[in-house]
Image (cartoon, rainbow, N blue to C red; front, side, top):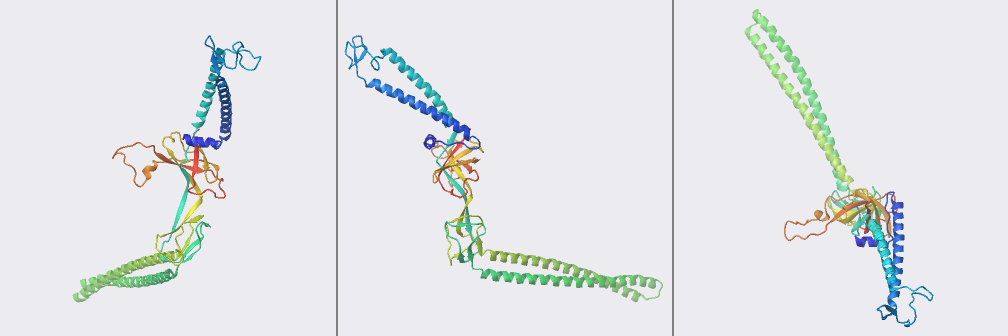
Length: 413
């Protein structure tokens, strides 16, 4: 973090976002003035000390020091001719006072410097991220047209690749014919149902007459108007008519079930036709989003299979920064804190904010995460990916691209 902050000072510092620019600018300017004054005072005292140390001195009889250029009978002077003579004790006092003033300035400036440097966290282990949409085929076929190339900007819905549609046109026509046949079968089943229903109504009427005749013949038989044979024959006829009604009722139920079965076949034929039409539409591959084409792998005449990657589209209207901070740096980080993002490629600062804090360290998301319970354990400071979102309306010409190295600074206060 010290290196990051030094780099930040070399660039002249950064200012926080979200309404704190003026306050931080004033504090930073005040701190710069104090540091400049402190440097001037240090330089002046250092120059004076070097000047005193550069004058050769010789001991006198009473043990005091005397400059070599002064004769033994010449009075000791400090400074230009005519100036008041200063004793060594006075010079030592002035030195101590100057050092005390220097220490006070160092304490005051150091406190302000510490407050400033502890108000942010920065890292150079960060880059711009974005969505990389992979474009693949949903059907197999032969490529008959490629209408885009690498680095080309495309709009959502733009035609990019076309496959030979003839096989899928034939399949769609067959599915349409199957649907018409299934619909005709439904109409036949409905006609059979109507016929069976009419026959049932006729047999029911006949059975009703037969049942009434049985009752009438029974009265006549009791009065001995008809013979037993005639009475029993009428009973047999009524039983036959009743059985006919039951048979016709079963035929009606079967015809109704046949209609349901035929209608289900129609729905299946409709689904088959829809699938055939979908497959036919898949012969034209359109851009799902707006962006820039990259990793194009398809050419005219290629035979492609379902799921085969043909190219990719990088979205430029939805980007963010993934900053890998040390675990000791995220202690005071919160969602919504302002951030300043320095983009190396552009040499420019952008404003943003903390959009999300990680759920785990980067190593936990790796293919083979470390297992500290086995082997010799060595403590390593982990890094955690923090997501920083750019403020809107800063990149209207889309100069920011995923993969660019950045140096984000998150303001903690």
